Length: 83
Image (cartoon, rainbow, N blue to C red):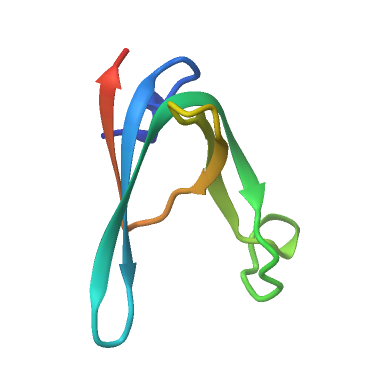
């Protein structure tokens, strides 16, 4: 899935893989996209724009009303549930 398809109002499922030295596990988050925005990290060594590493952040509202902000990385899978 292309990150450009993640627009406000779209219901999505994010699956993020967390890897450690000896193991890996997946976590899922389902909700409706409220906003998408590239934001800088606190990384001082990234040598990107303004010496920051910029990552796409997606704000979603879960079914129970909780608002979460997710950071997408190479281990994130996105599935559109409804457009």
